[in-house]
Length: 535
Image (cartoon, rainbow, N blue to C red; front, top):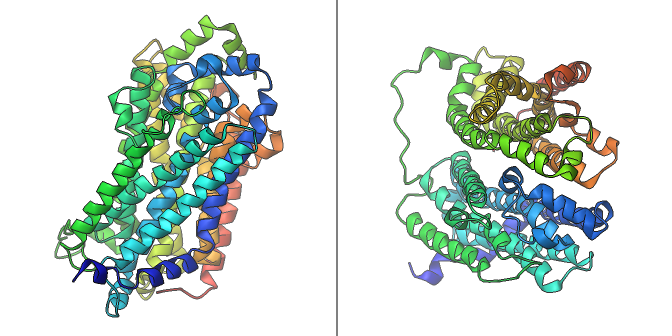
């Protein structure tokens, strides 16, 4: 088959993909653009003068802030553009990467997993048409992200060249991970495993960037290994240089070529890594829905646990730098203690919130397995036995509850152990672990909401990501932007004061637990009264 023939019907598949994603893609693109627009609108109000921005710069000039945000270029003259680049761009590039990964996986590996790709390939469609179409849609989506973020920055009277550098950098970051997803979709025969592998690369990229930026001012060689770092390494609004953005182009070209190369070395529907043969007979635990849920998600749980712990330990070890920074800078101390909280307690509370938000994302992905089980027909097969709908539903939700508690405990333990390597006492380990576990009711609200939406209609369950995105943005940047209390209170994560434990609120936790229970029960009722959907 010639190169031209291998791309036959690519245009048709592009139009089909755009038709299928006519709702999802605009939501992703507009959400990222609005995130930038809000930052450009709010930050000048909160930090109106150069002196106020310099106080913020001193706060950001610490290992903890560098790990969470970026290398900190321009801190000596902290302009609005430098502030946005240093504190916001990373958290807009990550959603762009996630959007691209899910897009590529959905239109390639998921199509093969459901058998639709084989049906389409039986017509006049080239071998590389589906992959090329998915990549072209990713280009369209990330072009939209680049334009919207650049235009949002221009509303703040920022430099046009630097604004477009930021927008293009975010878009190219998304495309770099689209190329990475093109490779991971060739390795496994399951779409969820392919997207998980690509998301693991995102996590590794964040960790490499964090370690590299902390190790040396401006980042060391580890930073340059991370695609998430290159848009900040372009130094917009400080000393703009375009060439770091070419690294994303190079990654895209290399990974796409590798993806095409690998695709011709496997059969349609198969992966290059063959699935491991299981036992001839099922283990007794697989005779229950809960045991099946554990078996289906144990690999994902192990991966999440390892990733969170590896990231939590170095995060906790930065607690000493908080104490030193407050001692050296009284203005920074006033910021840390603005709500009467001890600086270290404020640091631990921020870490607990950060990891709770990550566990909230895990909870959504875990509950969404209910949707994939139904779409593939596995739910119908299970319900054809003596398993009731309520038992099936609550077994998967129960697994999510248990797994979320485990991940919160591991995250808190990691932060506590990291802090204990410094001047913090051994008692900090238990305190931080318990404080992080206090976010379990908030995580369960997100999980129960996902389950409730699934109970009404499986397609609605993905809307739970809006709640997670809202909680992440306003949880991490609400204090920075000095938002009204009611805005942040809409997030279930805003009602837990993790540290100190003596101030841990009981009533909000009980209310959140009751809300989670009510949502779960509502979802169960809806699930029992609707028809099953399948492909």
